[in-house]
Image 1: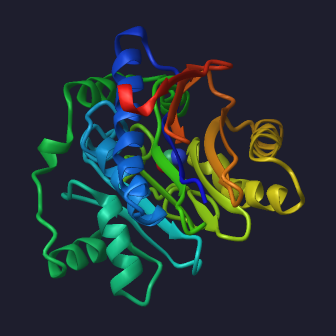
Image 2 (image 1 turned 135 degrees about the vertical axis):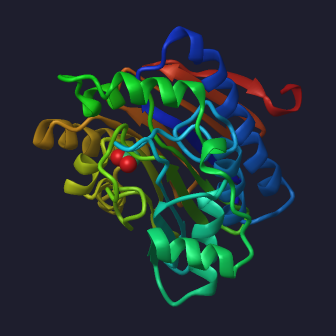
Length: 309
Ligand code: GLY
């Protein structure tokens, strides 16, 4: 099987000043994941590595760079799913760690549960020896500025969120034909304390099944949950649609049915892939057959050989 990996840096509108950094970040992330696949590594390791790269990059709403909640705090959600076994692990409203996606993997591999939240997730992180980080180290000037702007009377955090940036995620298929999906986010701008979005919910914030493929979405979490976006796309692929057609059909349904805007990266069990969105922009990158593809605006797709990047 030819390995494939596709990543996104969130659906939304990305200002000119952040466009280049956003595009560069997804390329670095996809290459970090692809190096694992090239060495014969697993799809699960590849998607985790790619998402860690974006959590560590302050450009994105995940890990360092997460949006702030109504009290100016950072509460993060993440999920990882293994298409071979349908095992998954997630954390929600977790604080004070750098890489929620790594903690999600530990939930999957070291507990009997699928999701740990808030205080419980922190206790588990401590028990696993995951280093605590200062909350301030996860904030950026940009996240603080947007938090203040959206405290203003009359501002609409949902519109503002969709107008700026979203979640990060990755899907992959490895040389064994195993698929995996991973998604991580700071959630919605100025969200209520304790708000849990789509990201840690199986079938919403991710889905992976070796029989059909893997999906990682981005966008307005409440809308994604209403249509169980990831599982809906897998369902369309089960019915014979290509990744691109399945993604477009499900995103259009979310838009017309619940007025939800978003984007997805998808790979199927044959290694066909898609990066699709109904927002103005979504930074995405994919590697297949040593070719790096990337884009930001609708209809945009550039290609470079991996060796020259
Ligand atoms: N899709 C990310 C969130 O709404 O939390």
